Image (cartoon, rainbow, N blue to C red; front, side, top):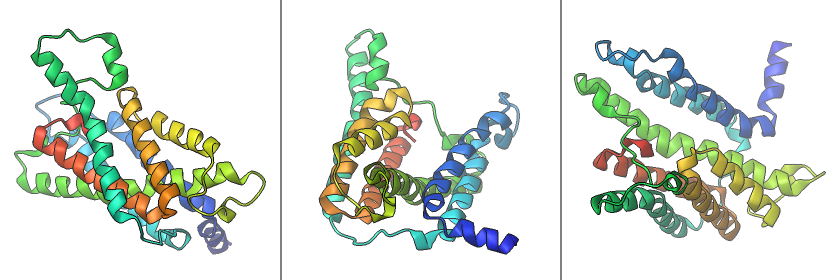
Length: 252
């Protein structure tokens, strides 16, 4: 009976698209439970995200593999367009932070509304420097960080937002999988892009809305989930490299 129940779960296409994101989000709450604010403690107590997020990555990868037969990324087309839109999206994402640095350099006083446009400092975040005294762990942590950003997150998010929700909103009483991927509907655009926006921090709302709009356009233009995942992967790679080079760790 247990085996039959497991097979039934694995055959559920809706669960296959939603479960990876649910598990991913659940892991995001764990660092706060394990963190102890004491600079004299080992890194795994002061910065538990450096071991929790690699576990999160492996668990979500296993779930994606388990449900892999439900995912259709092909046809792989529109990849040059996806790359171009990824660059535009990331430039828009980091622009407010760059604007802040320019304004501060000109002695402009920060205003309360800056936060809502993302014109905030981005130094606080996932800092690999915490592991500087443990070079092997630092390299392994950075590797897993980019696996998470470039492979796992794009798949998880695009499967939910474009692969499932975009089609589910359009479907109505019909099975959502009967809706061809990339079918345009303004209501679906509003709901999906709104959800993408709200899934981020308030300072990222504007950037997330613009990013979500670009990915929606790509989905409709190419009708390829693979292109959306590819755009997300390229964008996350660029953002991760930017955060690492500039030490604006709040971006990743």
